[in-house]
Length: 421
Image: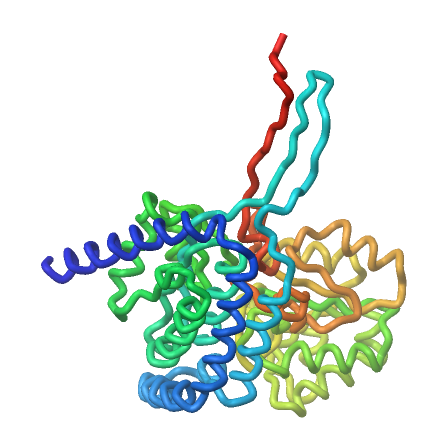
C-alpha cells in the first residue's frame, strides 16, 4: 500500500508540474520552441554514444526476457536510427507553428467578427512500449503544439528513453523553457500507468503507442480521452487491373521492410483473375523471402504455403507472416476489409481509376492508399517530421497524429460596441 501511495503522490506531483508548464507553453514564442527542438537534436547527436550504450543494456535485458525478433527490431537503436531521430526533431522544428493559426473567420450581420484559432490541448500523456524513438517524437510534437507531455515508456526501453529524455530537457534549458514541459515517469512500476489513466485533473488526452494488450487496457480503463489504434490489420487488395511489377515491389516492401511496425501488410486479397495468372509469382516471392503465407484453399495449392484458418483473417502478425485470400472483385475485397480490418491502413493495387475510386469511397480506414507500400503509414513519411501515433477513431485527430492534430481551437469574437438585439 505504501508503494502505491508513493506512486500516486509522485504522479500527482508530475501532473501539477505539467499543468503549470502547459500554461506557460500556451503562449511561448515560436522561436523558443524551435530553439529548444534544435538544441535537443544537437544533444541527441552529441550524446549518441551514450544512447547506444544505454540501448545495448535494454537489448540485453530484452533478449533475456525472450522478446521476438520483430520486437527487438523495434527496440534497437544504432547510429542510423539516431540520425533519423535527429532529422525528425529538426523537421518538427522547421514546421509551421500551429498555435494561434486562424483556421477560418467570418463576419456576422450583427457587427461581430468571429475567428476560429488553434490552441494547445494542454497536457498529453503518452504511454508506449518498446520503441525508444517515441520519446523524441512525442516530446517534439507536443512541444511544437504548445503542450506539456508526460512520457511513460516501456520497461524494455527504460535506459534508452532515459538518455533521450535527458537530451530533450537539455534543449528546453537551452531555450529557456520550463523543463517540466517534457517529463518522464521515472519508474517501471505498472501502477504508474494506472495512475495516468485516472489523472483527469491534470491530463487532457492519453495517447497509447504499442501492442493490442496495452492499447486495449488504456481504452478500457482510461477516464481521460484517448487517441489510439488497437491494431494495424493492414490489407492490400490486388485488383484485376494491377500492374505486375508495381505489385511485386509494393507487396514485398509492405511485408518485409520492417515487419514489426503497424503499417506492415498483414493480409493480401487477390482478384481471381490475378490468382489464375501471375499471382503465384507474388506468393512465391514472399515464400522465397522467408514469409509464411497463410493461404486460403485456392492459394494453398501453391508451393511453400500454409493452409489458413479462420483465425488468420483479422490477425496482426507483426512478423514474417501474411494471410492471403482470393476474392471475386473489389466489392468482395471491401466486404472482407470491413469485416476483418481495423480502420488503420488499407491499399489497392490497380491501374483502373474507377475501381480505385470505389475502394476509396466505400472504405473508411484512417489511411487509404493506391499503388503504394503501406509502410508509408507514418507521420515522417507524411511530412509531419514524426507522429505521436496513428489514430483510427472518429475524433478530430485521425491517421498520423502530428503537431497540428495535437491542438484544439477556440473562438475569438471581435466587435466595436456590438450589442445583441
